[in-house]
Image 1 (cartoon, helix red, strand yellow):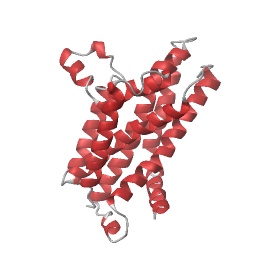
Image 2 (cartoon, helix red, strand yellow):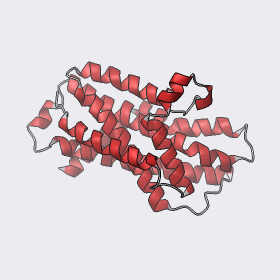
Image 3 (cartoon, helix red, strand yellow):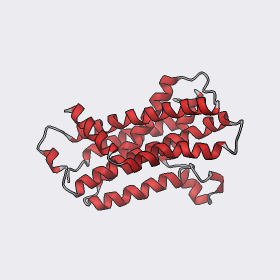
Image 4 (tube, helix red, strand yellow):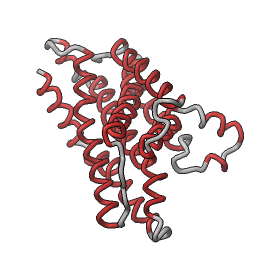
Length: 239
């Protein structure tokens, strides 16, 4: 049953190639565009740009792929069939995140290999176990938030609209494209308290290998992951 559900989630992902391109190819395209202006500084880009690339891929996989597909399946009543099977909400959510964890980890490995081979970046000595664990934790946080939004509203259409709003909100107010210093004071305050900021800071700490578990970023990300993990199961809807 678990393997069957993982296969189902992967098929959903493959059937939406636009999401694969936007979420997984866009960071590579962005890397090419940026690298032309920072020749000789690829190490700096990798150190400070890596969290942005990982979070973009995670947001797309979670919000525009997994959660939107789930909301659409609710809308067309496809998930009614699952109610007649042994598949429980916790199984559906768990297999969904497991299937996409493979994708995000492959993306990170490919991205690091790509920057090393083609741009001469040096990844140096890293604690790969801690770094990989943090990437998984951050991905789980965004996945649970997106699945909560995909289920909490009675109308599947409302869920789709909210997923799009929060997705672009996380991108635009996550210090990923617009520098924090360039934002008005009120937006700076909002941005500094978004999950995106805490996730980016945590990934960067894991990359540098310092202050991962001692700062507030880890506590916040872990707490948000736990809360929305429970909520995504509690409010799970088959239709």
